[in-house]
Length: 170
Image (cartoon, rainbow, N blue to C red):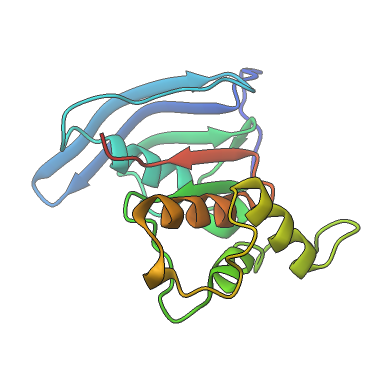
């Protein structure tokens, strides 16, 4: 990861982002800067590229052109698990074959061990944070949509990401 050259202190910096799928251009010339600690929302009609932009930030989508920097560092060639970015997907993307606790713990698989706490303690702390303390052994399929969303949020927060992306329905 290389430093952004001009000293921009933005937590997120996107410049001239372009994504093409064959002959279809999904994004063209997207620029944005988000300051550290800032809450930023992308708003637009369905199909305008909001999710594609988030996927580029998270590293799940490779831009055709342009650049993405997080924390002042270029994300070119950096795999998703090394970006320090947590994502809550529109569909929640919970694993149906895992319990709630296992889904949350999955967020720690590439992270350093929790400082001063076991994985189990970190999972319990996060489930308390999202108001699901008694759900650790529950099957995700038995949860309401709102409960699934909170489990997905807990999983995204598990490794203490420097950036949290929420891909949300209207």
